[in-house]
Amino acid sequence: MHRSLLPKLLTGILLLGGLSLHAVDSARNDRPVSSVTGESWLNHLHRSFGDTSMGKTGRLGPPPSEQEAQVQSWQAGLLAPSGPEITLRGQDLYRLNCRACHGENGLGAPPEINSIVDPVRATSAALMLERMKKRGMDITPAAATEMARQAQSSLMERLNKGGQSMPPFSQLNDVEVHALIEYVKQLSQTPGTAQVTLREAPVRVGELIVKSTCHICHDATGSNPTAAQLEDGQIPPLETLTSRTDEAQFIRKVTTGAPVLMGTPPTLHRGRMPVFFYLTREEAADIYLYLSSYPPSPLNAELPLLTATTQQSSGAGLNPPTIYSSSVRAVSPNQQPAATAVNWAIALIFLAAIGFGLSLLLLFCGLASYQLSRPRQSTLEPGELPIAIPSKAEATGSGIATANCRRT
Image (cartoon, rainbow, N blue to C red; front, side, top):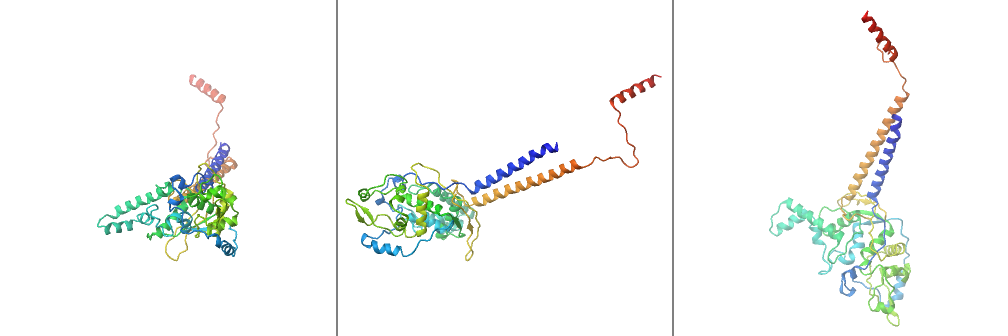
């Protein structure tokens, strides 16, 4: 019996371990990097490039007469290749995902693009209590806490699902959302914030910029416009960018601007594309890497997520918590800041289950081995005589003999 149970117990332990590792891996690795898909956000809104402030930085590239001097200035520094991972902070995530519309300080461009400052400050119970008292409204701390909780939920919903003019940022995973929210709270002077850092692969950085910034104006796919069509205002789709320019030209176009051939006959004109001066050349190269590695698709698809572990800290002068991640993100649709702690809790629970199962296995093996190797020993007490157990035949004969004796 012991020998028949042993393989079953061992199989159960192995299955438990496999399921545990799969659950931990699923918690850390939710989505792969994916191609950008579909129409631009401006086309989705049926809004023209000239009638919006979205995706505009307020800077344009140089006119054609300054092209030669600008090229020489740009080529003065060599572009170092990106490493396997890049360290980002919450402020970098804001810069890569939000700044094109909301600006450096989060004030936006009303009435089209609202400020993020007041909605973010509303997530603080202390600030909510102070704000209500200034308006002459006496509310309890519990009521302020509930109002702050509702504001937090509204902010997360807006980030995940978008709004009337704001696109959804479902490409952000829970860890990235946590880092981003902590920074915008800091930007809005909300108390109790902690700077968070994370590590991303270059292709992941490119994906974030493309899906959050470039896709505002550029469709994912489409025909490559002619010079005449460019003059009429047509915007090249993302899938054509790597064929229209090489990497060096693309980096220059994004970070400092470059003249564009437009019109009939084609002549150099100052480009209409905003200059994203706040992006580094390495980040522009990451965009080119992403578009080359994951060509845009016309179909809608799920957006990616990253894997990470995080540590929390707060206060000035302390090293920020670090999140180690890869570009394999992001994310559940319900992105909550505490999701990383939940993932750690799940991992610890499963590891504890594996340890408990292995302990039972070792205990069972030890008992089985002891029972199999143990010699049979007498259990007689000192001075006690063994009692012979008669066989069936002997017992039957004895019974007959006893009966005969009674008759006589």
